[in-house]
Image 1: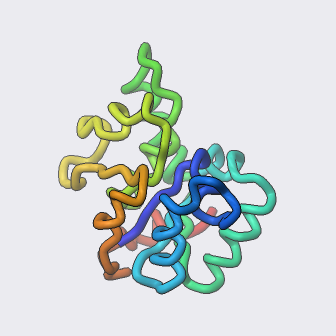
Image 2: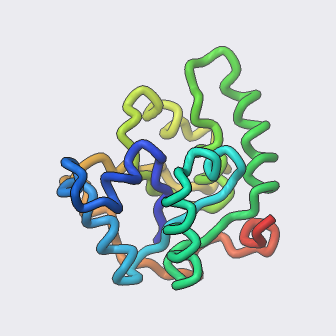
Length: 161
């Protein structure tokens, strides 16, 4: 199983001194125990990462705990999603594209305004499971052991651009 971590909770997941770390530390433990993988990619998502998180993501990738998804594939999906959400208040099309392209159905986020967009099944492939949102420790039951082969592993998705 895998997870996408929205930029608005990165510090809560990875920084023990963060006041809300207690709600998100189970994600960090889950990744470090290799029970799940962090999924990332796309130009906009990478731009949202502060320099220290880019280094962390590269370290996690090198350790086999994070999987980059091809930026070009995400950006193509993002264009489709931008078109589909035109006229709405959605500003996280890059996150929806990342979920869609990877087949990952778990998202850590506190952007409550975006939840309806994240959960809009019409923005995902028909066979995509319902997106679940991890927003506090009460969602720790969503962190189930992963089978890395269940991640969409086509060369087009996983090849880093």
